[in-house]
Image (cartoon, rainbow, N blue to C red):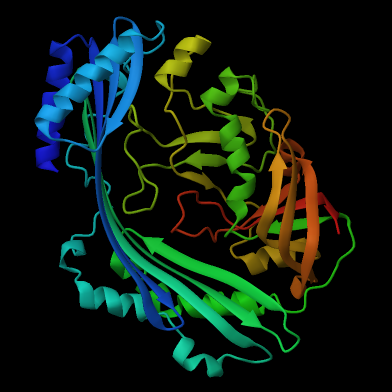
Length: 446
């Protein structure tokens, strides 16, 4: 990466010397190795090396953003000259600025400050990757698992990667982020004697190999168990019921809130949380934090794409909206103070004294456990939603049977005001740390 960093520095100097007033450069470089598995055998091998340079140019009160993966010096200079000429043809935009110096990160120069890089990564060779990719497969011993069904397909992927990025600008910013990732994922498809087929997927990922070794041994087993659990779905009555959403898919009802808190949505008047800053919109029990500095944790970042320093903060505290996510550009348009451009690593604090999904089911008593969403839509302006779901009916805290062809409808503000449980079982492999959630009085249709 050192060669690319020097190229970036030269690009900034060259752009400044040929008409640019200010410049931001973002370098990205990645290497990924992937092995695909089909029915216990290697089916695909891929390796990809990618690098790119993105230029943000501020020229005569105008702005343009350009990207290239050709980093040879002579060709890059021609690219920059053409980019500057293009920017000069654009309309003036006085709100395009670099962030104020006191907002920029100053202590992310090595890239490894968050301990997201596994130093063992360079030592992993072909034989080890083959061992890891096949380590989860149960195809050769599938007869041990087949009870009332047949495993007809097992597909998996193992991948490891390293990602390195640098953000620099003409005012002295230098910020680097380096991380490795190891991921295993398997999908199992089973068939019943009557010919019905059911599929399910399970996966895990972490910045360090040692953190996913357990999942590599059990990933396909978990996928098979989830597929077999879907056998025998039944239609279920509609009406108002308790809704429990498994941690695996619970971010589905959190993302619309984060989107509604984003500066672009607010500036475009396309947010159901517009003009709600400082108001108690959600229940007292809901606290949603951004925790971007957790060492070794997936999703942690010290800075955003502008090089602005992230910080731990409350997004929603005891139901009160505490922040919007507004970059420098949108802040100028709105006439408000900028923050960071996006939520980095959202975390929901526990609610209702529940630690596990089983605790939540016991607290809910009866209702529908959602383990997946099948399409649907939501209105970002009103907060209304309609989602197809898959999952299970439970009673007395116990799962009784799968359900099919059900729909949930409502409004996100109403939904979240009916929150009564949030467990402590969020999966660390995800960038959004959202546990199993439970809501009352949700409208279901069968």
